[in-house]
Image (cartoon, rainbow, N blue to C red):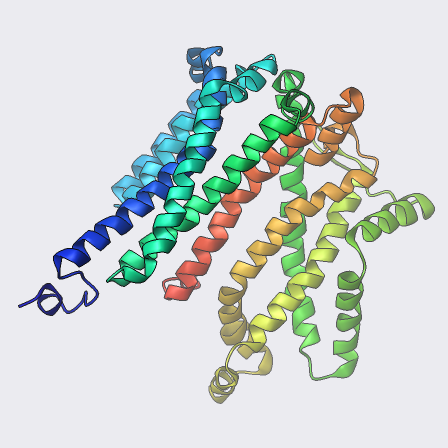
Length: 427
């Protein structure tokens, strides 16, 4: 009895010694590709980070209150994930909890910026780049050269994966080498990755991130409520009900968001004297900030309306007929049968809209905000105006990534669970 016949669930297994060698070769090719990427990409990055760690106070960073709180929350989350038998998630969360303070310490040690330049231009970095390119070429030749001989589907996939990783390593390695040889690393790092010039700005960037999230959350939540109402109006059988909703949706979807911000603030607030200032305890929100909130709600409502409309229309017609056969009115059927099912289907696109809105909040830069109401991009622009150094824009980009990447991961996770049918709507 052969291996394949004894394990019918895995029909694509190697059986002869030659096939076993080909499978082992495919695994080796994949390993070459991984090693190539690790050298070409990770090598220079780790050398630069290591130079920063060597000059930093690592213990001081971990002993800071913020880092200790981060570690407690991160390791607590890892423990919770492990208790629920999600070991991969637990390891990822624990690694993140430990590595973030290490990376912060590494960046703090890259002052002056010349330490980063010297590490990137070092012999060790050059060896890592050349080694990554060499291993990448080897993975490309091995993967594409032996792909057709692989006896199993899995081996073919491993060979292709190794070759693709090799291509990526070669592209990145050659890019680094060209930048090192033909470019001006000193000038580039000074203007875009000058950590020293950012010292003392952590508080203002944190405030900018909070203001950015507040603008996005208010705009998204208000837009969802408004969008659901507009979607129900747009689906009406009566033209007099449907037409105003369609005009609103087409107007806000058809005009640029920056135009809407400008007209609502400069036109209404300044031109008509309608100032939407708001004071919440010790916090004072300027007219420009409140106007931006209102515009984000109105704009998001138009896009959310189309999302809800598509979600409602995706529900099978028989659902409405079944609800009405039970004696429900049209409104009751929409409330208790159709809309709850539609909401479940529109969660991923609404989360995507939220991610987009977080980035769109940068458009408030055209308005005159109070310093305490600055968003991330406005904070970066003010820093650049004072120093003419683009490192502030780099810091803002990192701030946006810190906010949006977890949300993107959440979108992917929700979509995966919805496709598997494991999520139900609860009240």
